[in-house]
Image (cartoon, rainbow, N blue to C red; front, side, top):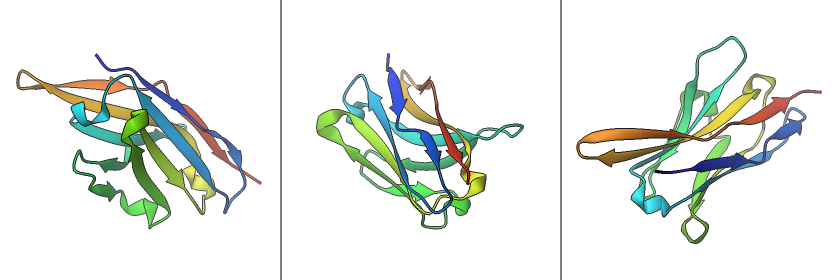
Length: 119
């Protein structure tokens, strides 16, 4: 079992920054996949980016170098630093953890945190 708790969402003006946190209930290196997703109103959930256990990151095209995923292993926390936010970044952001168990991947989701980019 893995519990994931996001925090850090809020209201920000275009061009501003926010840092989201995803605190895991266990050692993040025991979680095979750590990803950030988002879901805007009326749209499907989409992948924002990921960080591998080896620390390699990858991002969706729409990120365009504005977001950074990093982690603090001592705190079992993964972060999503979002800079130069745009109106279209408004969404609920979710942390995802995937754990391989007996050949299957078990999916764990956080509760989501709202990010609103507005004037």
